Image 1 (cartoon, helix red, strand yellow):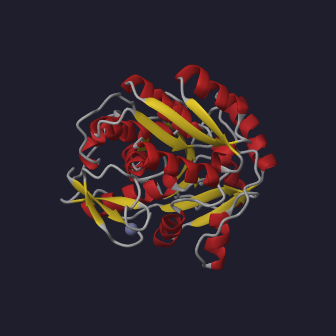
Image 2 (tube, rainbow, N blue to C red):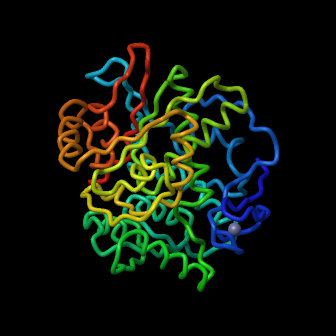
Length: 352
Ligand SMILES: [Zn+2]
């Protein structure tokens, strides 16, 4: 689809040749705004079935399959969307294929990004396939196993930052501005890729009433919301499922803001679930909108609850998920569904 980029903060409009991922006027987050009406698209099990719903890109460098949706062994009205089926075992791949494609199209030789782990793992994987260099900014407390794999398997150059993800993100942005590297991360192109989770879920289970997602930087939740909104506008679905955002008890800025009906404010993240250890979600305001507009809610889960769910998930399904990956399952104990409800829990990542 043809598109422009619109600043969510000041309203500045850029055409699709603009290759910085933040607003040149105010530094705000951009959103992909399509020129035409969104088409109705039915997936057949391949990521690029949804190409007509994504920003036009001259370079498609990798084919993804869809991920499985399986019924929960414990609850008949709960389904698991297995994003661990993706090549680098997290939902990030959906955004990375779009984003790396745009970097190649823009003629970039290097990609810079901040990450808590999974995003760098995913971006570095596709960048390597496309022949681009990668520079990753990570907090010093980053997951050691993920660091080893990003550096060892994918040849990324790593910068360790004395601080958390939010600090790393500021440094990645500065580096990209200085060197002309393509700034990857939780920005507009990635969100377009992430929204295909919602399209796939509604194709696989059209009667879905709830989508339960873990929230770190809030790209997944806001991507799911954008996808649902587009489907509703196109007439593909009549009602949007309720979106339920799950955060770790020790890193819950979105939950706090939603409960107090305020804007999101930074909190120092304290959780072992590194993939959702984000103190100030980039798409926090849009996540709040997603919760309000779909009539959704939030749930906080402790590290111990996630750890227990991680073991249960392995025992029941024989699959490995990371702590954040099972946050949606840990949230089930605190949610009530009616017998006719069909809830989809997104199992977001499995890098442990
Ligand atoms: Zn702006």
